[in-house]
Length: 405
Image (cartoon, rainbow, N blue to C red; front, side, top):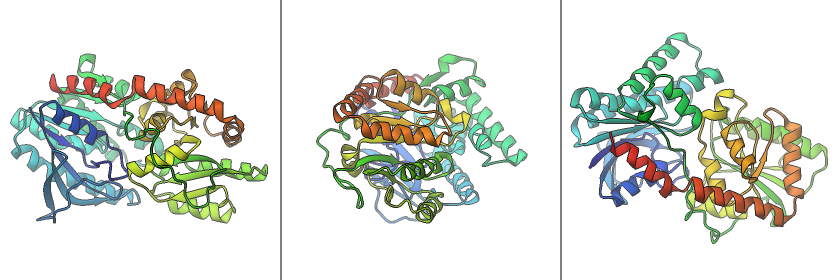
């Protein structure tokens, strides 16, 4: 089958962004299908296409995937209005592709919600089967975070959400809460499948070349966070915990924040102002392959989000699955399905939300835990990764739901 795959933030492992779409597309190719990937440009992503843009577009084959990339550069540091404009521009330019390119199935994955628009046109005008993958519940999450307050904008997003869900032949949700959110609009549960983010077991293998950032010694206990430094990530909680650790005179414990985003500059300024540079280390985003070496050298992975109840069951964070694949114990600071996994499988520590004292205590506990017990937690994480979230297992479920459209 010929599959048109719309993902604005598509990346290969050469970038630092999520690689779910790359991995799913690669497996579709391996099972005899053709994939055309339509995407934009992203500061954290590498599409693999390096030819010049012609009239704002370039095209090339990347590991067998036919990639169409629009020259629409997106960055996590961009202001909300600029990002919204780029979302709409990508959707509008993608409509032309959806109406012209050969396709047996049209697949679109959010975020943003506007990714559904080309799929809707292919469905309505060309009568092509349309499958929509939902990575975040919009407008529920922006409303809960207070990012969008304009009632007209929220209404328009709600209308697009309703139309997208109703028009799609099949839907995929990446977390239990997302599936529940879809089901509120689509009573036919057979149209909905839960396929969470997955673990790259080979990429995060034990033989990765280990490295640590400048300022972190081999003897330090190193906790890492890898991901966007934005409002949703709530990294102020990390700084709060670091301040408590310093006040207690904690030595030999380093927190490494890897990534970029709109909040990074203010976080760095706060760390400098409070004199926490010896505890909190910032590092630029790194490609997935290099990230594997950092993970192999780390002692714990930090799964951090802002204390927003909509996040508890309504997100499927890439970094969490990377930590599992790397065999890292996980410290998570909010309740929900991720915390449930950590506690059920004894692969880390789940602490209550908005409690810097317990956050600091959790880090100290893990630092003081002997290496054998930490390795046991890490081994449990790797088992969970292999048994429940490996890419091949998830692809079987993904492809069955996609191709039955």
